[in-house]
Length: 190
Image (cartoon, rainbow, N blue to C red; front, side, top):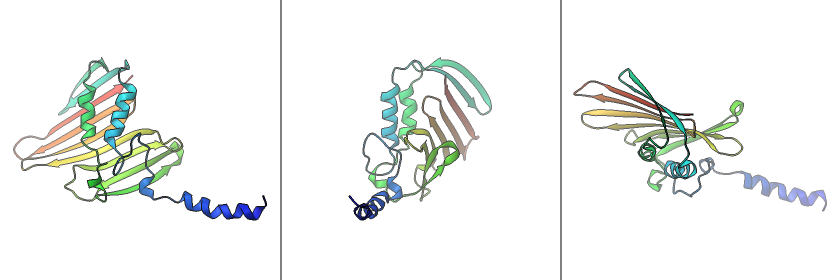
């Protein structure tokens, strides 16, 4: 085969490499209707690590009072804990177009970061950031911000999940009728 025949394949190769940036997301095991599926990802993590004997340090801070407990994965209700993350899922088709999407590579850490930011202040999940390995697309961490407003209060959350390393839940409740409530719970895997 001569060089001119190879030149015919170059435009096809270049065209196939051009993809919509919103579709270049961390890989999930299941196809979702919209954006990255926290729900599917958490289910996958549950199935992968269920029954593992992780030692865990649980640190609870409530209004500047701190309590630390050494425990394990069997004594913590991880299902309820993961429900907090599942509630933030934006993969349903009804969310398409309601989030600004961007991504960038972080070459020193060999990561790619995906950002979703709510266009409307009425959406529960305000921000979602996924950091994945640049080559394998395996998720390194997930960071989520939520906000829920009622007539009497505003509850904001900042959630972090680093597989087999750390789960952090920070919640700030500003009430119109009572004092501010601040709770931070860290689960540090050993």
